[in-house]
Structures are given as C-alpha cells and as structure tokens.
Image 1 (tube, helix red, strand yellow):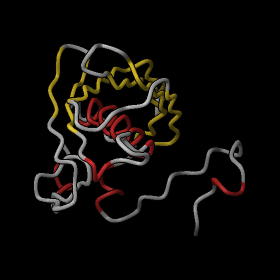
Image 2 (cartoon, one colour):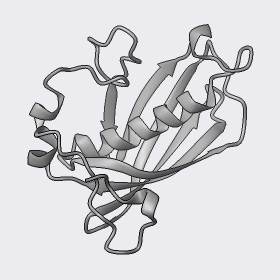
Image 3 (spheres, helix red, strand yellow):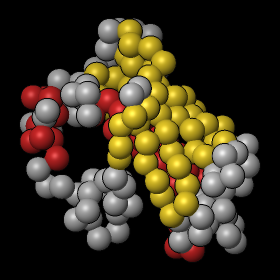
Length: 158
C-alpha cells in the first residue's frame, strides 16, 4: 500500500491525529466498506440536521476507503449525491460503499448513508480516477487531461 501518501496522518476524514477531523474507522464486509458516524451539533447546517456538505464528505470517504484498502490509489473525479431525507444529528449513522464498475483508469462507486431505523437518507455515485502513487508523493496531483473531452475549466494548470 502507498503508505507514504499519508505519512503526515492528517486526513480530515480518517486520521485520529487531526484535531478537527472526523476520525472515521472503517470495516470491510465482503464487497462492502462500512463506517459509523455520530454527528454532533457542530456538524449541523439547519437546527438538528447534519450539514449536506458533510453528508457528501462522509459518502466520498467511505467510497474512497473501499478503494484504498484494496491498494487502488485514486482521486475523486466526480460525485453526485442524492438527499432523500434530512439526516439528524445525535444518532449513529451507518455509511456503506461498494464498487459498481472498474473500467481501466476509472472506477465507479456507490455509497449510502443509513439511519438507525434502516432508512437510506442519502446516496452517492462517484467516479474515481486511478493515480500514480509516485507522482502523488511528489506533489504532482494534477489530473491528466481528459484527451480532448474536457472543458477548459477541467484542464490542469501548467
């Protein structure tokens, strides 16, 4: 595994060292990656409701961890989150992820946020781009050009 990519151990989502991080811990259950999160009032947007950006972050991280534990080094290229129910703070949330497809450099993933009663409150689908760990370790995190299919905004800075 490319451990050198996380030598500083300050990942916002999963590091135990990051003082403002989420400190998520993950488990693998066959083809499912799972984590749990108990949101507090500091994580809310509307009163008593988990901030939607944090919902997307949690879903992104559980999908990324599914790949990471399998030594698939990626960066999120695209994520779409569907919110179907307000997510309350103060309850134990379950987040799960699984792979949908692996097409060369692009991996498609699915994630879901599950409330204690079993209701799926949010779903995400994401595309992850496989990266060269050597380039990442040298700070070369620019995504490669999309072979003419991307817009000017999607092209990396020189």
